[in-house]
Image 1 (spheres, rainbow, N blue to C red):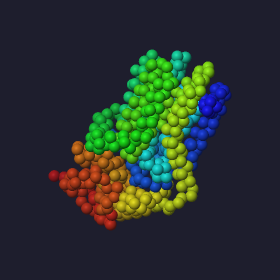
Image 2 (image 1 turned 90 degrees about the vertical axis):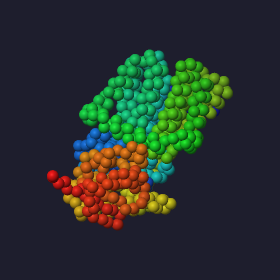
Image 3 (image 1 turned 120 degrees about the vertical axis):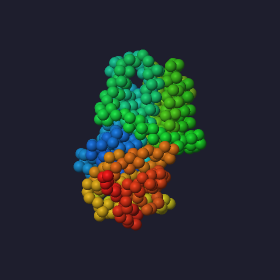
Image 4 (image 1 turned 45 degrees about the vertical axis):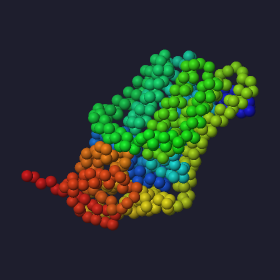
Length: 546
């Protein structure tokens, strides 16, 4: 048992640090290469989600700004990232691969540079791998790794950044830490918080709470505070300039989002999620208390660890409630790695080991923490490996839309149990192609088009100019009957509207609510142009002068 602890800590710290860092760099490079080699994963579930991203990125490529020019639901970071990738790819859907690879390289580099001198070599190794795999594993958080998809990857990006902030804020600091180490740590967290605020505001708020708590606990580190402000401003100011400092639309958009989210969150939902996630939440909180009591002598350090546990668990629950993910608390494994590093550091920086029972306790808590962190890491690694294997040797056929720039998107039929859901596979491709043919036969290439479904695949799929205004997502978490956004925010001044004639996940309650609430307005402004088995095509009526 003693040997295992010594191996983990490293009998020769300097030698082991260099060797493990070298192996870590190789491992991170392999993950980045695998992400690029995968390209766009075969879409086994939530295939329509890919068009949330492509619609917004296509709008950005056409000069529109999220929130200001259309109801983006998410912040501008997501759309700017993939809008840039779309431009580089000459508007081909393979741009999704370029964006994901960029994120893999960014998170890998960021995690390595930030953690290598702040964590012990072994915990640093696991933490870097965990954060990168969390960011790029191609399946929705909380689902099986075999459900490969491009759905909700913004949540993965947000969690990876929040994990970096959690570690930087609450890792052990030492009196000998110089200006450079303090400044760069603060710069990292400030930059991450700014990115999260403009990626998805809920992640940004969680990051800011972590940072504010750390400022109170580490009040003497002035260089870190300077770094925090510098990192935040360096990203936030250019983004605000891109939005022309027009914060009014962003505030209104957040208001509608919070209204829609609030209608879905209540005490019953909170208790239900706590019950579902109890095996992820409670063991790590118990580990936090045990490490603070058994391995920490300083009162201030105990308070810091207990604060980290409280804020990480609270933030994870908040994000779970406001995200569309089914389950999972991804910040708990990061907290577990923070605690694993604390145990490792307690042994690495003492002259001799404590008596046998303490060694046994160290091993037990190390295994406890590594289990909490290792299971999600293994699941994310399995998701990436499965996606690669599924791309090379698919078990089920896939279906693609005929346009050349969409060939990278391969839609796979979902489980037979959900055969009535039109969100994936052959049926999704079939009725989308039918809608595209209907629009092409009854309109010109310069006319904008929008479907009254969750996502709008038609604007990007047909490379039509996007309309001014409108939402990229007509979903139950973005539009609520408690306070309906104006029709301009939902549909915009679009020339053509496709009304679905089918039932399925694509026709959400919000879409039906929009159709019923604004039925008279739509009927007054649009007239039926043509029909097909799955669609009714409406055309905007000509405006006549007095």
